[in-house]
Each structure stands twice: as structure tokens, then as C-alpha cells.
Image (cartoon, rainbow over all chains, first blue to last red; front, side, top):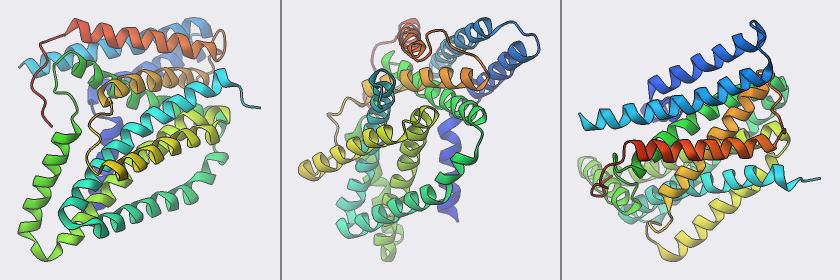
Length: 71
Length: 249
């Protein structure tokens, strides 16, 4: 049972190593879905928001990670 | 017919990611074998491969029942979570913020932990070694399976991606059997950076497709995403760069 729990915990950590990064990605996906399906901004604009959002999330996460290790 | 411009990124990503995972699993199995001999390590490894095969047989056919758009979105989001996480860590490693991944050091740490655990439970040393090997094979194997499904399922490239992963695992097994020591010369940190870039690019691509976005240029958009994530990863590392610290686990 302990082994299964350990494997389960590591599987969760595989996708949610950094909680804030995970929340930001999910929020971005939800935002892009709203832009595309409800606001109807057009697929190209929605796609650009998705790509640029992911790049911004990555850079912010790296910056935050570095600041955390500096403390 | 296999279109190489589409298949090559999937095969390359599956091969590189599987190489990293197989090297990590091999290090732990080798630590188990060094402590208690090859029998418990081989038993744990076989049980791990058996568990992975069973999960594939049971859950694999379910993939065909999921509507394609939901499958693309789910895989895309999981790939983004997984890929951006790898790329974040790789950027921090490249910047010298966190220590580089070192298989020799990991091997020593696992051996020390196992020694400690075995001295506390002397009678169950074989069991501990087998469990250690089992856990390593299952965890790293699940990551390989996820990556193969993630890069292969959306475009009918499961077979080429599986072959890429199988080639990587076979390569590690053969080289590992020949050298009998941790494969520390595999450029894992560089590979992880590259895999993080590829998985993030696939993640954006599939998430977009799942959300109903038709990418301009279709599959060629993947190459643009690769360039963008590579640039962002390198820029992130440059933004926070420090002198490279001593190697640790």
C-alpha cells in the first residue's frame, strides 16, 4: 500500500512539480477557450495568446524559481 | 504512408525522452543489483515491466473510445504541465541555480539509502532491492508510456513513437550491460533541455487543436513552437544565470 501511495505521489509530482506553474497553465487554457468559443476573437488570435502565454509562464516560473533558491 | 516531417519530431522526442528515463531507471536498478546481486534486481525489473504491460493492455484500448478533440486537449494540457516543468528545471540547471543531474552521485545516494534501510531490516534485503528496482522501472516506464502516447496518439504515430522509445531503452540496456556502471556520460542535462522544448511545443500544438485552433502551416507550426520554446528556455537561463555550483544529487 505504501509503495502504491509513493508511486501515486510521484506521478502527481510528474505533472505538478511547481503548483503555481500548473495553475497558470490551466488558467491560460481556460482563458483561451473563453476567447475562442465565447468572445470569438478568431483562432489565430486565440492561438497567439496560447503561445505567448505559455512563454510568459515559463519565463516567470524560471525567474521565481531562481528567486526561491536565492533565499 | 509515413510522412517524415511529421514523424521525425515525434520519433525524436520519444527517443530522447525515453533515453533520459531509461538511464535514470538503469542507475537505480544497478544500485539494487550492486547491493544484493542481480536476482532481486532482475525480479523487481521484470515485475515492473509486467505491471507496465498489464496497464497498457487494460487501459490502452480505452484511448480509442475517447473523442479525438478531448484526447488532444487532455494530452496537450498534460504535455504542457510536464514539458514546461522539465524546461523550467533545465533552464535553472543551465543557469547554475540548481545542481546538474549526475548519475554517479544519484547512484551513490541510492546505494547509501538502500544500505541504511537494509541494515535496519536485514532479513528483507532482497525484498528492498527488488522493490527499489520495481518502483524505478514503473515510474520511469510510466513517463515513457505517457510521452509515447502524447507525441504519437494525435496523428496516428503511436508505432513510430513506440519504436523510438524501444530503441532508446534497448540502447541503454545494451550499453548498461556492457559497462556495468551508471551511464553518467549520457548528456542528460542537454537532453532534458531538448525534451522539455519538444514536449512544450507538442503541448501547445495539441492544446490548440483540442480548443479548435487551426494552426497556420499545420504541422510546420510545431517547428516554430520548438524555436520559440528553445529561445525562451535559453533566455530564461540567461536572465537568472549564476556561476555553476558543485555537482550534487
